[in-house]
Image (cartoon, rainbow, N blue to C red; front, side):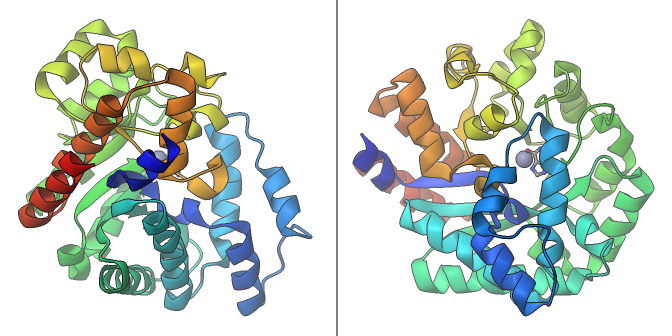
Amino acid sequence: MKDWLKTLPKVELHLHIEGSLEPELMFALAKRNDITLPYASVEEVREAYDFDDLQSFLDLYYQGMAVLRTADDFFDLAMDYFRRAQAEGVVHVELSFDPQAHLARGIEMDVQIEGLTRAMRQAEREWGLSTALIMSFLRDRPAEEAMSVLERAGPYLELLDAVGLDSAERDNPPSKFAEVFARAKLLGLPRVAHAGEEGPAEYIRQALDVLDVCRIDHGVRCLEDPELAARLRDTQVPLTVCPLSNLRLKVVDDMRDHPLPGLLDAGLKLTINSDDPAYFGGGVLDNYLACHHAFDWNKDTFRGLARNAIEVAFMDEGRRRMLLADLDAA
Ligand code: HPA
Ligand SMILES: [Zn+2]
């Protein structure tokens, strides 16, 4: 099964590129930028990745990304991830980035976007990997700040495939960003949002009704509201589920307690993703393998999950047709 899962053409829809920063690259970039890290070694960094919840992870996530200063740093970060992803059979990556976290450190939007988009073009040339870029707003920061980031992104709108919403979910409901997402819609940008990871099912409802999103990131708490689960089934709004993330952030205590089998039984449109692979113990393939070990799904189930991701990805229709054909041959 492992070899087969590796060859299965997999599409990644939920990846924070800053969360793909492996400790080795963190040290290399710290050296290049003359930054002193609060760790003595790569091993010490990995040992620190023992989280109690989303916030305890976010604290280290924001700290780690401080080594990113120049466009070359963003380029190296993304190339490092694309190299690993394509080697494990990922054929399309939708990466999100958190501009506010970098702007707050004095790193301008053009630096971030230039580095990331240069890596996206190079990955396409080098490995035939297709990519899409999602600009995420930090929900624990004021909505006014998100609005000003959206305005600052004006010159780069053509390079963005969607906007998203991430960071600390509790007490930061989607409704807080109603105006920002309305403006994004007016600008012609598709919208996605994290909801129902640590926050209640009600936040999933708000993401749909107030932000008019086309996908829900995580969404694993939707079964707590049967009416909402039925709505997600009827509309087939996709959920980008990240099993290893849920385990490491203690959304679930054990992979065998993960709601994924229940979500499948409920007829929801599910996809499997990595979220922050450097922090949560693995990439897309590792997430598929974790499901294999916990749920013993058959090939048809995995093929169905991979098909869902291809169907709802931000990609051109020719590429979609080709990947669907590759999938049927797998
Ligand atoms: O898992 C996550 N949840 C919310 N915000 C995030 N930002 C990076 N990773 C995450
Ligand atoms: Zn996420």
